[in-house]
Amino acid sequence: MTDLNELSKSALSAAMRGGTVGWGKIGSADDHVRYSEKKPKRPGRRRACYCGCKGLATHSGMANGLALTSACELGIARWVRTGNVRATR
Image (cartoon, rainbow, N blue to C red; front, side):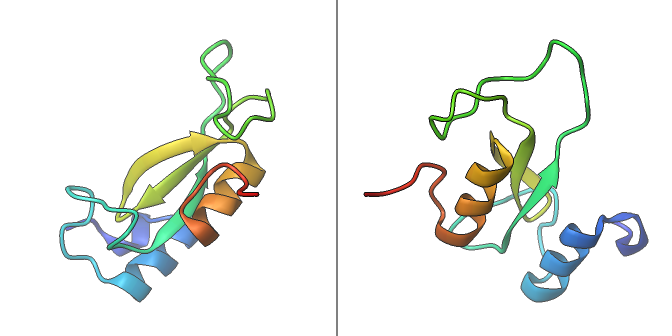
């Protein structure tokens, strides 16, 4: 298990709400608490966003300590709420 003092604020909140069983080993968007983390700045290493905004993927969608997806800030905020990066019509 990870030391809880080393977790970010959003990761700690997710760990307290969802538990720490399997933390950092197994993550599921359906079974675990979803949260977002800002990706570290690495020049020239950003991917295109999957939400369709044609911007860069600046955030990671996390669950149980593992990154499951990446997108822009709005796309990941949508993923945390609904489980889908793209807007549904």
